[in-house]
Each structure stands twice: as C-alpha cells, then as structure tokens.
Length: 502
Image (cartoon, rainbow, N blue to C red):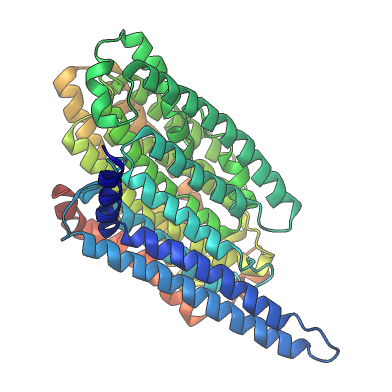
C-alpha cells in the first residue's frame, strides 16, 4: 500500500475511533485541570484549614464530574457505533465489529460504576489521590483497544497499556502494602509479558504476518506441537489478565493492597476485554486447544475455591473467588462452539454487576474500620444494617450460582454449552470439567453462604460497623448494582437477544 493510501485509510478510520479519541482528550483535560486546581489550592496560611478543605472538596467534585462526563461521552459514542458501518481500521490492525462494541460497553459500564464508587465512598479515612482518574481513563483506553485488536502487535501494545496503568493504580496509595502489591504485580506482569512477546515472535516467524486472520493458513503447514508451544506462550499475557492458573499468583496481594474501587474495576473490566482477545486468538489457531483450556479452567476453579475456604479477610476472599470465577468464565470458551462463546459473554456481562456490588458493599461496611474488613466483622450486621445485609446476601447467593439470581443463569448456560460440546466430541477432559466444576460450585457454598450466616445468626462483634451511617448516594448506588442481579434472572433475554445478534 502506498503512503497516500495509508494516510487516506487512517483518516477514514477516525470515524470509527471516536470513543478512543474522546478518552485521549479527556485524559489531557483531566491532567491540566488537576494541575491548575492543585496550584490554586496550595497556598498555605495559618487559620485557613477550613478554606483548604472546602477547596479540596470542590476540586474533588470538578475532577470526578469531568471523569464521569468523559466516560459517559465515550459510552455515547460507542452506542452510536452500533448503527455505524463496521470493518477494519488503520490498515487492518483493529476491527470494529458488534462484539467489540458490546465489550466496550461492558468495560465502560464498569468504569462508570468504579468512579461513582470512589466518589461516594472513598472520602475517609484514606481518600484516593486525584491522579487515579486519568490513569483509569488510560486503562479504559487500553481496554477499548484490546476489544478491537486483531493483530499481534496491537494485542501486545493494548495489553501493555492496560498492565502499566494497573501497576500505577495498585501502587498509587502511600501505604507500604500498596507499594508491595504494586511491585509484585509489576514483576509477575513483566514475566507474563515477556512470555507472550516470545510466543508472538514464534507465531510471526512461522507465518510471516502479525494479522490473526492471515495466520491460519500458514500455521496449518506446521507441526501441531510447534503450534501448541507458540500458542501457549502467546496466551500467557491473556491468561495473566484473566487471573487464570498458573498466572494467578498476583491476584490476592493486589486485591488486598489496592483501593477497593480500583480492585472492583480490576475484577471485571480487564477480564471482559481479555476474554474477547482470548476467543479471537483461539479461533485463529488451527490446533485444538480444548483439552489444555479445560485443564486450566479446572485448575483455576479448584484452586480458587479451595484457597477461598481458608481466608479471613473479605477482600482476599473475593480475590480467590475471582480466580475461581475466571475458571467458570472459561467454561463457555472450552465448549468451542457458538453457544459456549455466547454463554461466556453473558457470564462476563452479568459478572460486572455481581462483583462491583460485592466490592461496593464490603467497602461501605469497611468505612468504620479503617478500610479493613474480616469475615467475622459481618456478624450481626443483618439486623443493624438490614438493607446492606439483604443486598450482601443477594450478591453472595449470586456468586455461589443459586437462584433467584443471574449467577445461576450464567453458570447454567455455561455448563449447558459444555455438555453440548461433550456430546459432540466425547472429550473426557470436558466431562471432567463438567463434573468437577459442578462439585466446586457446591464447595463454594461453604465460604459464600458463611457471610449470610454470620449476618443473621451471630451476634455483632464490632460496635463500629453496627453504627455505620450509609448516605443516600451510597444506598442508591448499591441498589442500582444489586437490582440487576435479581432482574436478569427473570429476564435474561434482555442481554441474551443482544448477545445472539453479535
């Protein structure tokens, strides 16, 4: 392609790149606004503490308001892309299709709720520094690019943008625990990134192209063992973002160290984008990866559930729970059929509401305990905090996968697709995943339902938590996140029809 043709293609591609451009401009505006407001507020003088506090509250409102506006505008552009002409962008390194639009909406929704979470909850005792907002938007930009990436180079660059932003968000707080968690995250991320890059170099050496759509024909001419090695190395970075075994080690420390709104976003948004990348890479590889993916899914579910049984800290419990749910998320992918991919998409879309609600409710209760919350602290809160107790019970039932919550529907669809796959190819590892996966769902009852048991059948152990005050914005946000967990059980077609048309 000549230079003038490349330039014309890039100009034409901008029409499908408006959400990403909106985020780029928003990041620049946020950074400049933060610097201006910081300069104005840093004029210390005696007797003006109250004035500085008012200025800080005003700065907070301005920056959070701008962030919400930026995410909302980006979301509006994405909705407009549904009726827009789809196709390749920027010389076929990105693909705007219905799947990319849907997954971008999912991560946008997660970002919107994460910002609202931080705005309504994280005011005391350790508020998030305002620097986290432009970093979050940069992370969201990386997720947008991940959902559209169909080229090995753009897959790598977008994952790196997401990873670097995640490292910064983890270590942004001044605490030693946050610094330690951020460093561990960086080290494990660097290793997985190097492994993925080496795998991509092998794929490029085998095919002579970075485009996923052009690599299938060349790969079929190679030995299956070579394809497996190159494919597994390439999948390393994707499995890392999904917190799947054996790339899960960073998860508990990061979830415990990072601020709760950040962790809530980590638990859903990168997984959603990584899931779409995983499905695109697996469909581009000619070798059958069903058995290896089944083993990884089974190991993640089992390790996550068994580790969660022994946790005493609420955030670490949800960390191991997220590893198990990443394994359940992979169940639909293991089916390697259209039904399975749709089930996985439904799972990740509904998991956004369930997990964001879980972290929000835990953060609300942890306000009175310096941001920390153990499992025993839930004792007796069902009577002193009836609304939060009811919402937390609903969320725990959903994480378990029981009716009448959408968690049951998501698991039912995933395992139904897996059973259909077994009836087609009779793979024994698929049957093992089906049986042991359901058994693990039973094991999860012991740690998920322990929280409702403590809420209603044990006396209060901490007076501070019983007396905590929940503001109206916090209550509204908790309700908005919890209601879909019930509503989508009775009306799953609201999302399934949409997914079916992707």
